[in-house]
Length: 358
Image (cartoon, helix red, strand yellow):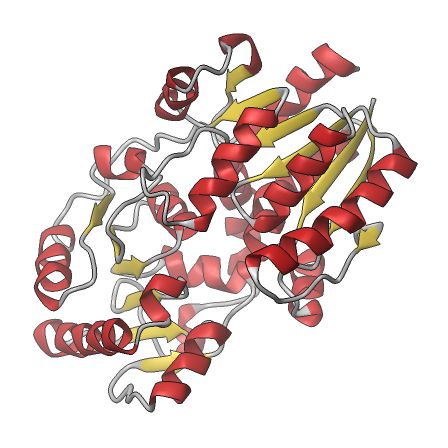
């Protein structure tokens, strides 16, 4: 069996890392194709080094651009490599333009396709990620759904249950494999913080940072939280957000802005936070795995499992919603049951592939 692993963003590197390790351990023939959708090569390289992963055999370096430009570049590059390498199955993960481009090429070349983290739905077709994940699911030959909710989403859309497997989410594998190792590299005390003594913020989605009104309002909400709770807010600011803050001339007084961290350092920052405020899907999952309360700064989530177990609350973007959400979540008992599995998702996925294509 020969496996193509396609990835293009740092969250994909994290969630694919347990898959790559499982392939290595079982000495299965595979290659990694990095599209370069995240175009900070130095930072991507650090992720591979930190996670002790081999360098990708292929890197397309597609970089930034509109959705059409980026996806088309991905498709052109992926097509050449899949046609030459002829894998038995191609794996994509999540909902990025890399997933969309890789899935479409595999389907058009009549190559078997497996979609990891299949079946997630926000119900909001304005989100490009929702379009990407739906298309990928409907052209996949095997769909690895993390939970029963995602499994049932797929069946409702008419996808045969013979294609769908509930495997858990590889984010649990990644967190468990890397949490202890990360302690050796980084401590929140390095930033002058105490465990449980700060809020952590991440913010990068276009709907939040591309609007001056919304971004200004969110920054105001963060300052209000500092005044109300007397806890610092640590904000590793995404380059896109930094650009918009500067473009709009917004002020961040009182908020501890730091540069983006590598995955292992950020994992420690998450694990010691009192509460996390985010618009990231992956951070919602990681907070749930780490038993840290989460407040999601969006109108919807494709991770309803986190809400159902009491780990997460979706509050929107206005000041009242944010303050009310934090007040509710800061007092929750951090004893929910992780809905994403026991950390053996990668092994399950590899065994399903071997039973079918090995």
